[in-house]
Length: 122
Ligand SMILES: [Cu+2]
Image (tube, rainbow, N blue to C red):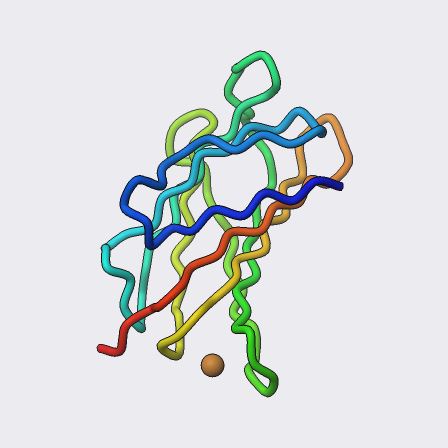
């Protein structure tokens, strides 16, 4: 499966990424710069034809690149149709990778990875 990486520290990055499963994602994280502690991840999900992907189950696993760290889990909730938000408690400065699990109502599971680099100390 095609994995598209999106560096969220790049302020230009609220970009749309596409893969071959028909899921379109725009992702943003705030506040910027991302600091250790609570951040909000916002995901705008759409189907291939641009229709908002409603009522999906969306969860996030956040991991650091080095060993010995417990992953951080969060469930996203839908705020407006197709837009999901998750609170993430990033417990350490450094580089994180967010693994998104999207369960559409029509079945299956779609995955994406988002890099969140250079999370600052408090
Ligand atoms: Cu760490």
